[in-house]
Length: 208
Image 1: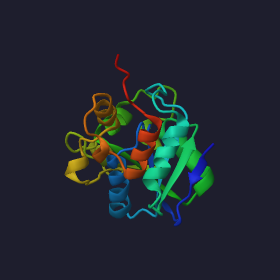
Image 2: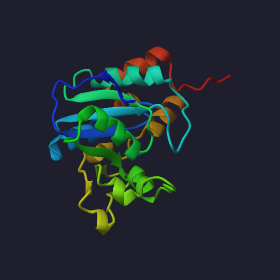
Image 3: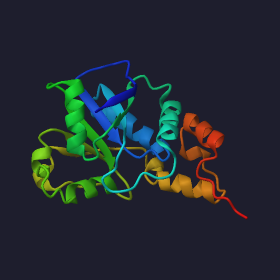
């Protein structure tokens, strides 16, 4: 079930959905959402924290700490929402969102090139074939180590998203590694998230 922890002040038919682990939330997450809202003419962007992940375990910062980082990062973003969902795959998330946003809503999932490649090539086994899933949503793909070119048969449902070049290489992994090694990391996360990381001493490595 989709649960909201922060609701956008503006609602509409075109909804961007940014599912991620947010371990931690980075400036790249926020930049992708801002770019998608403008380029995709989206009414709202939903930052979605799944309770389960289909491709990795839930480790690192707790669910509550990740929510706190999201709240801090998006406090001044009135068109951004925060939610959690039990679904992990895009089609599962779309189904939960459909129950809330209604049959007329258009969903646009936001992701980076690496995630898009994983999603397109994922072994869905007995799940709905990916081509049929794209009837429920479209995908906006930000560059990550280069732009993404979708398969030609899906070019009307998967689109490239232009973002600031300086955030292309920013990732949660880079932030965690920088904190653990004692390097500068503050410029890689939104200010509100930085305060939570400092307060809780997240991602530090105890050295003896």
